[in-house]
Length: 184
Image (cartoon, rainbow, N blue to C red; front, side):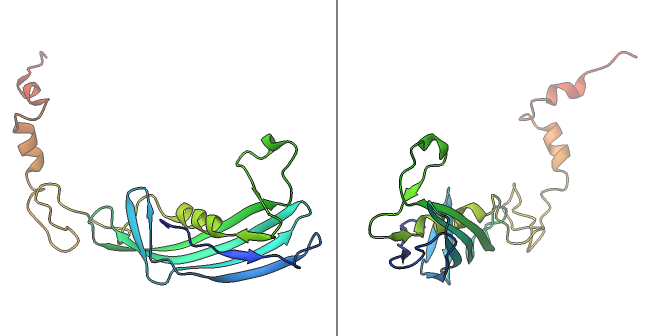
C-alpha cells in the first residue's frame, strides 16, 4: 500500500490483565499497492482477522490477512490473479525494555492513549505473501523473444531453426569454433 490507512484499535478498558484476549476483524479499503516494481490492484481491499493478547509486558497480535490482487504476469504480461493469505505476528510493548538489543527487529510502544495501529503489520503481511514470480497460470508459455507473440494464445515459427540460425550467426561468439578441426 503506497499510503498506509490507519487501522487503530483502542485498548482503553480492555486487555488489562495478562492472558486476556480480544478478537478484531475488518477490512481495509485499499485499491492498490506496489511491491518492488510490480503494481497490484485490489478490487475488494484487504480483510484482516487478528487476536490481541495481553502477554504481561505487551500486546501480542496474531492473525491473518486475505486479499485477491491483480497484476501483470511476469512471462506474458496478461492479467494475473494472486490470492494473498499472509500471517500477522507483531508485539507491542507497554514500556521500553532496559536491554533494547534484545529486540533485534525493533519494537513499538503502546502509548498512554492505549491505541495500537495495525496498518504496518497488515501491510507487512500482504507484502511478504506476494510471490516473487507472478504468473497468469502455472504453465504460462510467455512471449516469443523474437516476434513478441503471446505463446499462450498463438504459435509462431520463430523457434523452428533458431538454433541453426544462431550457430551460423556472426553474433554468436562461438561461431569461429565451427571450422575447428580436431586431429584424430
